[in-house]
Length: 377
Image 1 (cartoon, rainbow, N blue to C red):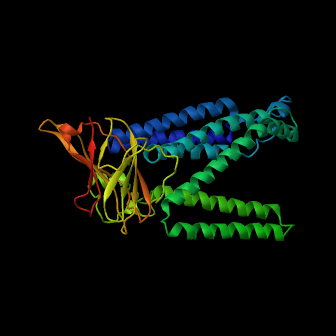
Image 2 (cartoon, helix red, strand yellow):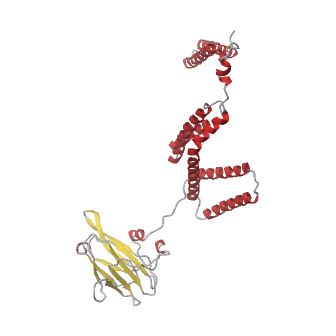
Image 3 (cartoon, one colour):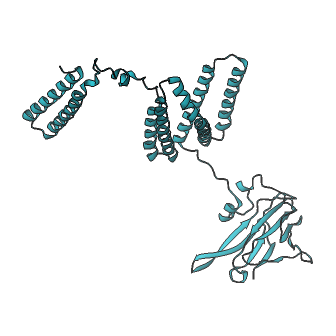
C-alpha cells in the first residue's frame, strides 16, 4: 500500500506528464512543453523521496521511534528571527538604491538573526527540560543582548529625531517639539498617578510611541532635508565686492567689542571729525596715515569708530591672477558695520608687494579723501 502523501504526489506527477504530452502534441510549443516536463520531473523526485521515507511514518513495531522520532520531541519555540532576517534582507535591497544607513541596518539585522537563531537552536537541545533550556539561553545571551539593544534603541531614537529636526521648518520645529514634550509629560504623569497601572499598558504605550517616532523619522528621511539658507559672512561680502555703506546679513548682531588680549599690530581710528588715522602699537610716535606690513604674515588690526554713523573698515589690496595677461586681481577685506563707539577686528595676509600690485590702502566707505596707505615690501 502506498502512503497517503505518496499517492497525492504520484497523481500529481502522472497528471503533469499527461498535460505535457497533450500540450506538446496539440500546440507544439517548446516553451510550455519544457516547463511542464520540468514540473513533472520535480514532482517525480519528490515522489521518490516520499516513497523511500514512507511519508516519515513510524512503524508501530519500532519501539525506539517512540523516543527518537521527530514527533516524540518537543516542538521548537516560536521565533521572530526568521521574520527579522527577511526584513534585514529587504532593507539591504532597499538600502542599495536609497540611503547607506538603510543598508547598514539591513546588515545588522542579518547578523543579529544569524547569531540569535543559532543560539536559540542550541539552547533548545541543551536538555529535555524546556524551562532549563530557556534559563541557559538567557544566561548566555542577556549579558550581550541588553547593552546592544539599549545602544541600538538609543541610536534609532537619536537618528529619528535628527531626521525630523532636519525636515521641520524653522517655525514648525519649536511647535512640534513642544507638542512631543507635552505628550511625554502627560504619559509620565499618567504612570506616576496610576501607581498600579498594568505593565502591559505601559509597555504598549512605549511601543506605540517608539513606532510613531521611527515612522516619523523614516518619513522625514525619505522626504529629504529642508533647504538651509547659509549664513552670510564678511568673507562672502568681501568676495562679492559689497563692502559698502549698506548693511548686509553678515552685519546683523555683529560684535562691537574686542578682547584686550588680542594680538594687534596697529589700531585705526575714525574720529568724530571723520578723519582716519592709524597708530602702530609698540612704536613710539604720533598718529600716521601709512602702515607697513610684512608679506605673507598674518596681521591683526583693530578699527575704532568714533563717528556718529555706522561705518566699516575696508582693506583694498590685490591677489595673484590666473591669467598671464592679468597677473594681479583687485581684492577686498572688510569688517562688519561698527556702531558709534564700537570696535571690530580684522585679520589679513598680503602675498604681493604693494609697489608692483598696489596701491594698497585702508578706506571707510562713505568718507572721501580719507585713507591709510598700506606698504608691503
